[in-house]
Image 1 (cartoon, helix red, strand yellow):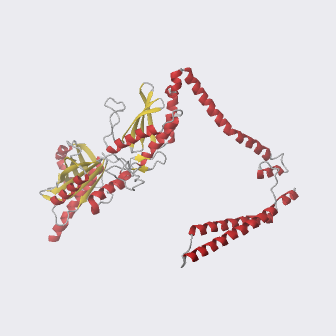
Image 2 (spheres, each protein chain N blue to C red):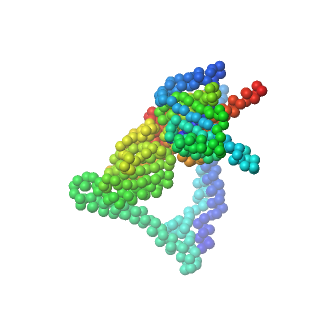
Image 3 (cartoon, each protein chain N blue to C red):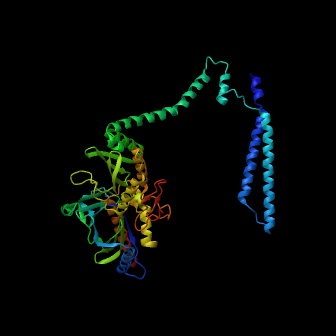
Length: 305
Length: 212
């Protein structure tokens, strides 16, 4: 067995080959360095060009030399034995005391399992979707057009509580004062409060108010109509409404809610983040109220174009 | 109630207090700020009566009783570096009853009066500090309403102050440093006014000592 190993891998040649690879890499990076630096200052334009070309040629030659050397060595190294399906871990099967440590057979089994696992995920997803669709189609044609309006309240609760757990600095309080439609009171750090009116898992309306502003009416219900007293939060309310129109994915309403909340969470630095374009905090007395939908960077309303 | 920064504006060279205040208010109006009535903050000093000091020889602590027109139904009682009590305005009557323990210092009443301006979410109050009949200095209060945590919006406030006061921009008030991310309250503003009044009182004492 020792013979097999020795024939397969010539260790001396292997070490040489590794250093040849290193040499090749450094000569290649010299080529790019030379290209990056460009022409050096010389008296005449012609002299500059000549020196540059000569330098470049030298570098290319050395790359060529190193590559040839590597090719020569790679023939000496020989191929690693090919009869091992799991590459180097196949060497485990060479262990003579297989009965005591069945590592290799266990490894093979684990490999088969892990190969299969992505299919499990896909199949599970398909199955879930199927059951939801079945329930929706049972409710008739109208329901099939808008399957989301039929999501059970428990499902909505579950999605919301998962989002609540996802963001530690954001607390979401869910209530249903008017039948099945949920209303959320989202408190973001000590910065702002958002009232979100939902229809099933669709967000119908949002109002952003200050952390110190009252969000309840006199009879203790959530006040979904009056706007904030502060201009900055009126502006953020406008932007949040824009965001609702931007994040639209009728087939996956839970993703929409989650994206919206992720976007909303970027307002935790409403007063701390300067505008990414002009670098200032204030413009016309307002901080950067716009958050980019993709990058979540802060911009003033007029700086975002 | 938002985060507030109270600072002193030095009187411009060759100008009177009144002229400097006018200069500041004109600047605010140029910025687009709207006038919104007047404001007043006053402060009265009490010291603990000699009879209650006891034999240990403790120095008497000063207590300041203050009012702020922004909170017309409240009265603030503060010790220097100490607790701040927020009470109803009836507290003044109580102080009269407590004459045996706290005595009002004579001619110690100091107050600032001026105009209140609104610019977007900022509330700016430029006032003339008076002690007795004479004007002693200028106070500038800037409040940023939407924010409740001082450390969050200090850089934003600073930018506003730099635009408005130029080279006389103050540093961060000490009350900001003490409370890392606690919610800012009216008491913090009153502490800043107390510190400002004490500073102005001391400034006045120096030249008097020099003449003697």
